[in-house]
Image 1 (cartoon, rainbow, N blue to C red):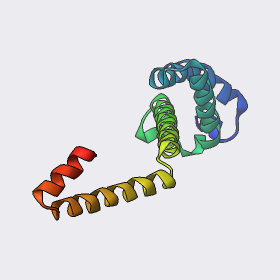
Image 2 (cartoon, rainbow, N blue to C red):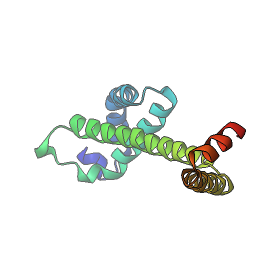
Image 3 (spheres, helix red, strand yellow):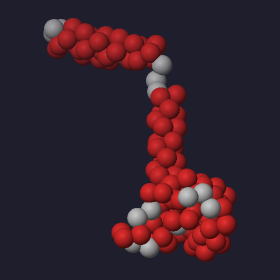
Length: 135
């Protein structure tokens, strides 16, 4: 990894050969989709090349560092997919919401019903019976 951090392409090729399989396996277990896993694994390997200078050998092995990068990237992809799904679901709910005209009509109908009930309560029992039988 130290040589990779200095831009040594041969060193990176060795790192790639050693870790690409385990990275793909880990990412695929998280994502459960081969195509997405391959894409994320590729992104991880590009990150390894770009961020090799951030690797600190005194804090752990290169494999652990790379697998941590891979796991984080895979989890980020899952979260992104879930957020996208949530947005689509909310948008679908908005599309199914009742149009404003229907809401207005329902409110007016309720108000009229309340007014009719008030008026019927003001009738005598004989008048109320006649109205009830008629309607």
